[in-house]
Structures are given as C-alpha cells and as structure tokens.
Image (cartoon, rainbow, N blue to C red; front, side, top):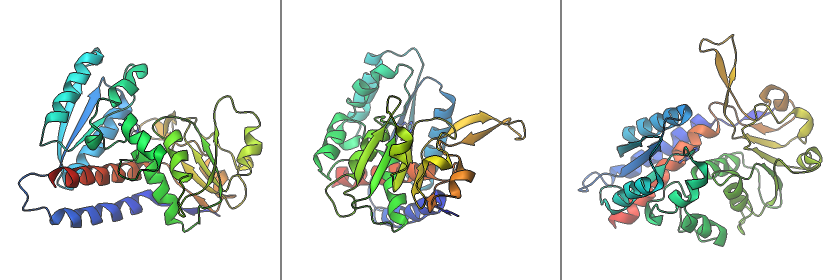
Length: 293
Ligand code: GUN
C-alpha cells in the first residue's frame, strides 16, 4: 500500500518557516506586495485566487486584486502589467492562467518584469531555468512537486521519470527541474503527450510518474511500475450525485487502484495544490527580499 504524500502538511511547514522569516522584516517600511491579475471569470481560477489571497494575507503579504473583464484586449492587459511593474509597493505579479484567449498567454507573461515574475512563466525565468541559472523564479507547481518528491527521501539521480503533459505551466518546467545537472536531480526524463506511441510501455518503466494532463483518473494501476512514486497534478470536477455539491474533485490518477501498486502517491485534493500556493508565497517573499535590498 502506497504512502500518501501529504501536501497540506508540507505546505504548513513552509508557511511556518516563511512566517518566522518575515518576522525579521517587521520594522521595514513596506510589507511584501503581491498583485493577482485575473482576466475574465473562469470559475476554478476564482477559487484558486481566493485561496492564494487568503494565505498571502495570513502571512502578512498585501494582496492587490486586478480584475479585468473577459473582453479586455492585450494592450489593456499589458498596460495594467506595466503599471504594476513600476509600482514600488508591488514585489510579485501573477497573471492567472488560463486567459480567455490562451494564444496570448506567452506575450502577456513576458511583460511581467523578471524580478516580479513570481510565477516564473516569463521567457526570462523559463530561460534561466533552462540555462541552469538559479537566480530566477521557478514555476510554482513543478517547484512544489519537486519538494514533494524530495520529501520522500527517494534519490532522484539516475531515476527514470515520465512527465505526462507538456504545458508551459507544469510539464515542460517539471522536466527541466528534474533533469538539472545537480545531485538532487539528474533524472532521465521522458515527456508523454497526446501523440505519444506506446505510452503504457514507457510509463511502466518509470520510477517517478508526474501526471499533468487534466484527464480524470487517466493513470491506471496497470500503467504503473510496482514501487513507483506517482504525483497527481490534475484536478477536474466530475459529476458525482453522492456529493452535496453534485461533483467531486478528481485527479489524473485512479488513486485507490494505483495506491495498491505504487510506493508513494499524492492525493487530490490535498496534494500538489497546497504546495503550489506554498511555492508562490516563497517566491513572493524572495522577490520582496531582493527588491528591498
Ligand atoms: N493556473 C493553474 N495553475 C496556475 C499557477 O500556478 N499560476 C497561474 N498564474 N495560473 C495557474
């Protein structure tokens, strides 16, 4: 039976450390400031942003919400970002994905000043990750997953990793983090996606599987090598009449069945989600420290 990696518990530990570190800045003239830019009214995004806001404020981070209507054009969004880039009281800027027009995401992410890009989605920060330059910001979800894998004590070096999905937000940076030339990484990474052939054969060789495709319960026990570590990044609402709200949150992994085969597994909810928020808080604090120095 797999051991469950408790994302809430790990995140709480990080919040506690951040809280203690922030005490040292109590006398400083400004508190950390985080701007959350939300375009449109994607329902999940509203929930995620509320969670981010609540936790940030509990930690003493001042949150500024910038809500723009679904019809807002790129020029207007860029104007808002430019204003936030110039605002000395704002140290971190996050543009919530997905934007109503997904094809504009990279252009918009690239407008966030690199030193305030706490989501790590700009070309500068993704480029630094690719170059192995540790001075940038890593995207929060893959960074949280990396923490979770490290928390198991599994040596990552030399392991075979399969990343399901190749998104900018999770899949691609996840692979880059795990194959860094570093003794805590150095994994052999394979990316699988919708056009991959013989996916099950590839997956069954993986010591670590990271599922980030948004396909409910896609990963079955038969696809997983016995003893593997399985990380579930997916979170989808699926209809469930037995639940009060009429739906439940389902990850990309068939949790019950895969738990019988894997050594480590993450739950949904309570797995990767809280760690994404923890990494965002950590990045925001790092941005604040760098900018006030
Ligand atoms: N949408 C899903 N995850 C994330 C995230 O980590 N950051 C942003 N900005 N949008 C997201």
